[in-house]
Amino acid sequence: MIPTTFREAITAPERRVLGRVTIDYTSLIFDDSVAVTASEHIDAAFLPQVTDNVVEPHHRWAAADGVAVPDGTWFAAPSVPGEGQMGWWGTQVAGVGGVFVAPFPTITVNFFSRPIRNLRVVGDSARGEFPVDFEFRLLRAGGVIAHTRTVTGNTLLDWQETISPVTGIIQLVLEVRRWSHAGRTVKIIELITIVQAAYEGEDIISFSLLEERELAHGGLPVGNISANEINLKLSNADRRFDAGNVASPLFGLLRPNRRIRAWLGAGMPIEWMPLGMFWSGEWSAAEEKVYAQTTGRDRLEMLAKSTYSTSRVHANISLRTLATTILIDAGLGAADYWVDPALDSIIVPHAWFGAISHRAALRQIAEAALGQVYADRFGVIRVEGADHLLGQETYVAPFMTSAQSTTITADSYFQKNTPIKWGELANVIEVETSPLRAAALQEVFRNNEPVSIAAGQTIRQTVFYNHTPVIEAAASLVGAPVGASITAATFYAWGADVSVHSPIAGAFTLVINGRPLQVQGRERVVVEDEVSIQDNGRLRYRFPDNHLVQSRIQAQTIANILLRLYRHPRRDLTMDWRGNPVVALGSMVITPDHAQWLRYWVIRQTLDFDGGLRANLEGRLVR
Image (cartoon, rainbow, N blue to C red; front, top):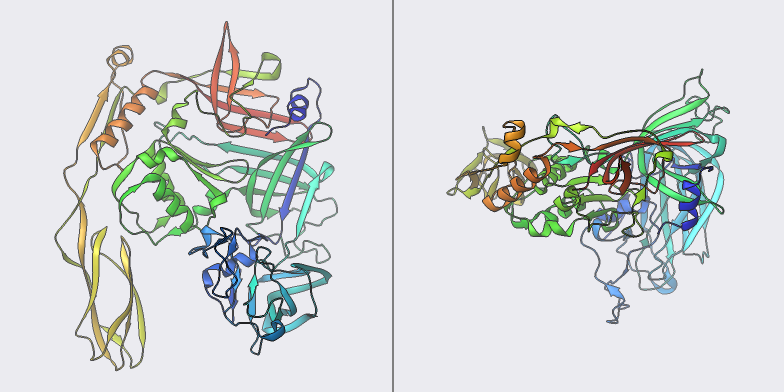
């Protein structure tokens, strides 16, 4: 809900616009240097959650301790981290008085060298459990203990303490000796306090936000996915951003992947509008300049650096379920993404991906759905379908309090243009299907040469099929030593992870049989617009090959939508104006064009703040 006071203040002829930026200098999200281990745990997959700055569990999780009752307030523990916040759960049950016995439950966090100024441990607020007696140890390289803090008799769910900075720390250890309840196990939700700084006023030299949900690739903008970007300049008059300034409170903390959040404010009292959530790249603080600079990009940039390697062949799956599976595999929680319910109606008979990035997989889904993927102002990844691309008037964009749009009059813009997009004109659309059919059972992998194995050894192999994708895969051993066996096997669309154990030395050959899925019976759908052909000549567009387009019905739908959108030249909007952060991606703006008022969906925007605000936007005409 956008406050009325903000709307009035930001559109006033004379206005005062304020900026705010916060940076989490020890944000551990997406930080590959962080590794969390524990002496005991019920599921290691949830251990990284103790460093993600989320301090509340999503539900009151049930456990086999006799506490849960069937009153509707207890929930089964999540099976994967994306389903809920759980943190570290131990296995040792506290005895009388909540006392644990040695060896005590212990959790260890390793990271790049950094100063530590705060200690924090957060228990499980949903269950009302917390550590009572515990000890922190901070270690430098070589296992040297630099600081120890022993606490007894704690009564706080969220215990925190500020200490004199201890530099060069690479490891934090928490040892829990007594728990708040007997008969329970350790449950720690958060462990590290982040170092966060807020910047306003003269601290901010400038920032520029680029956000977009539609890109042109030299043809029609199909399969849109884009990471928004912020370019930030902060005052370095006190030289706190200098990399060699050991006296700076930021020494050792200016690293990539620091979380940046930005706002613009207006009104009295000041109301703040979020501009997004980003993660920093490299930092620059030249000696001859009075500012430090970095560029941050949103979560989609991070998803371009992670690999979706666990893909299997999914039968009769909707694009919505497929997109959700990818986002959960990338480690996102339910609050971190939104997938258009309209994608439930697009069913793919056989969906699969090779070992590609999560972002590349989402791009293929966006292409098959004729939609787009982008992150909104709250850092939520949005996977939208074709309805948003079409710009239906019934759609109410995010950040709009009602169907009311933002009107931009001539006294609010400096320059306006409505160019004709001749390069995005197509009146003959071709879309081909890629139906998959299962071949007969056959050998899809065999070792090129026997694999040697020692007595008592377990060998884990990652193998790739001769043809992809493959279903109904099964592994076997040929020529293996007596007693050798496959102890674990996980099969993907592209290959498999197989573990082999042998009690005696020898050699073996791994063989995998399965049924490859092959493209058979391809069809081409062609649609044309005779009026446009007569006016402009034949302008052909061939939809990119996409294995998720497997039926003629889906191909026909794609062709019809593309023809509707691009059979006539587009008169889109480019505008240089005074700016308004209420206007975001997907917002509708209304602006004059001679004797009429035209409506546009915002597809790209740049907001520039340097003590004042100016913006440049691009819009797609609502048809």
